[in-house]
Each structure stands twice: as structure tokens, then as C-alpha cells.
Image 1 (spheres, each protein chain N blue to C red):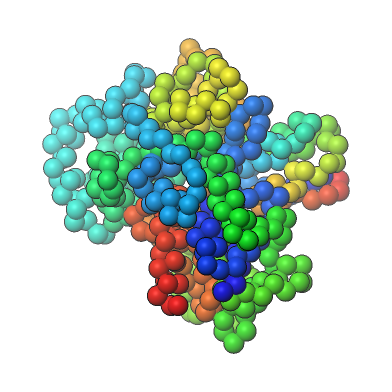
Image 2: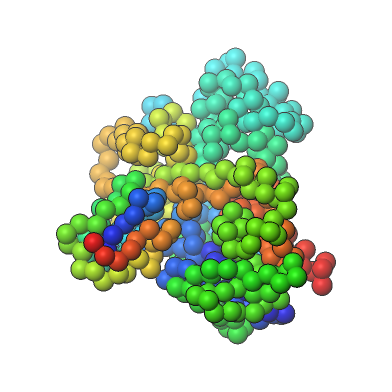
Length: 411
Length: 53
């Protein structure tokens, strides 16, 4: 079978690597680099990411790690220890698992109710789940903002519940908590690209697909600059909405069109810091519930020092976008950093925004549309087709696995 | 080179610019230091960079 893949982001490369074992794979990437929002570019000796924060949410035991292993990708993922801390109001840190220390007795008394909600709540948002209680909201906004780039009020309770179940019980470890790929994001996509090419597949950079060729209601290939590339199936890694722009709307189904209209991406801002002394002090996530904007940060150089120049640390903060005023969002994020580290020596390397057609998620978590499109043989992978209940790139991997199952059943 | 208003501020252009001719903070701006090498165009996440003044 000939497989054409639109977009060499993580989803496209995972699908390509998996399918290249038995099929002819060609990947078409618009940019001059593969990896999408899951690679890095060198800058002043630092490996700055194009999106993800050199971190794999469920570490060496999660869906991405399992899929990488199953396709034969040579990637070492190191589990973060500690996995997560919380920055207190005074700037000190406690383990994430000691979060109750941050709560008043009244808020602590609600913990059993919240545990019950996590098991049974199917409707509403995370904000509803925590009763819009300001103390709980600070914590839940920090977690949702860091992991999903959404606020509690925009995160479906059912999705949060599914994610927590996966974190607590979804793998061989006690907790499916974060890990860092040695060599960063780029090591992951390099390993996948190598597999595709070693198996005879091709990755074409600087190749923008301008059309999905549809004949008799089925995808038959793609067109690049008017040149036809035949395929038996087409897999798109550019999200449902941009994919739908590549074929004639007469193939659109009303229900799918209505779903496309409702798509909301999740937006966020990453601030990359260069520090001579550690700011976070460990490789795990540091959640920051008591800030104006920054939801959390990590300092991956504790695990992989090669991501920064000798003796330096790379620290990355992330914040969900709370308004459309980007400059104000950045200003408040930078102000948070100054307040959190008043006596530390660091510099801002780069502020990166993820929004519009280059968002954190093409479809906010909990609203993913799955792999199918109205066109037979045209599928979507990536962060618009994540598997339910998985964070970011884990969702991308779960979505690719769903597609592989679909193709297997159909063959 | 010219950056259109659709720039999202991903910063790729600044990272790959060989002469540090780009400022980024929410959106990107090309300064007078630009040597028109065009490298930024190939890395622009949303295709917002065009040739010409």
C-alpha cells in the first residue's frame, strides 16, 4: 500500500514509522525541518524547542514510549525524579503529592468529594468539579494550564478524570509521570525519521501539499505544486480544519462540518530562560499555582545537560493564554518570573507563542474529533486527533495507535 | 524579507536567523540587519514570511 502523509510533525512521523514496516511511505512537510512542534533548533548553544518542552508526560511507561519502542525507535527516556513539585506562595517547594498542605481545613475537607467526582463526574468542567473554589482553582488551573494549555473552566471534567486515571493506573510504574528524552524532542523525531528512511520511505521537506486528490469519494493521493503523487491512503498531520481546506467541500458531511465549526485550539506562551544557577533545581515539573499567568516550568538540563551550553541550565515556563492580548499575557508572564526568582541570575532567551494555526493543540483536549474524515482513505493524526484521556504528545501517540487499529481492522 | 500580520510569534525565525536580525515578542519584526538570506522563510511555522520589502 502507498501511504502519503501530510506534515512531518510527531503524529505524521509516528504513523510513517509504524506503517513503513509494511508499506511505501512518503511524508510531505511544508517547512525546511521535520518534527513540527516536537523538535528543537540550536540557539546560542541551547536546544530551543519548536513547541513541546523536551518532556514526555507519561515518561518511559506511557503510550508514546510504548509506540516508539514498538516501531523500533532508539530513544532513551529518563523518568523525572521528583516528578512534580508545587511552588508555594513563599517561593519554597513541596512535593505535588503533599498538595493538601497548601489548602485551608475547609478546602481539605472537600478532598473525599473530589476523589468521588473524579470517578463519576461525566459532565461539566474541571472548574465545576472543584466547585469554583478559589483555593482548588489555583491548583487545577496550574495543572490544566501546564498539561493542556487550558483553564479549569474550559477543561471537560470527563477528560480530566480520564487523564488522572491514566496517570495513576495506566502503566507498569506506580505513576505514569514525566520523563525526558535524552537529546530532547529532536532525538525522538530524528529516530523516527531514520526508521522511515531506512525502510525505504521518503521525507520531502519544503513540500507544501496544496490538494488532497479525491476520486469516487476516496483519497487517491496528494498534489504538490500541481504535481500528482498517488497513494492508496492519505494521512494528514495538520489537523482537521486545515485538512478540510485541501479537498472540495462537496465531499463535506453536515455533521462533520458542524464539528469543524466548533473547533477551538488551545493557545499558550513559552518563555525560555538561560540560567547559570538552577532556578527549579530538579528535572520534574514545578507547578506554580500562585502566579498571575505562569502555570508551571521545567529545567530539563538536570537530566540532559547537552540541551544547554556547559554549566548552564535551560528553564522553560508555560502559561495558557487567558486573553487575546498577547503583549499583556507576555508582560504578566515575565513579571511572574521576576517575582518568583528575585535574586536569581538568568536571562530571557526567547518568548514563543502558540496560537492560531500554530497552537498548543489544534483542538483543545477533550474535544478531539478522532482520525476519520468524510473522505474514505483520508485520516487525521496529531493534536487534533488525540486519544481520549491523554496529555499532549501522549494523546498524539494514542491517536496514532487508534488509527493503526482502524487500518488493521480495515485490511 | 517581510513578515505579515498573521505572524503568531513562534520565534523560529529569530532562532534560525544567522545575523540576529529578528526581534520576537508576541510577533516578530525584521530589523535593518537582515541580509535577505531567506532562511527564516523556510522555518516560519505559518508561512507568514515573504520576500520583498
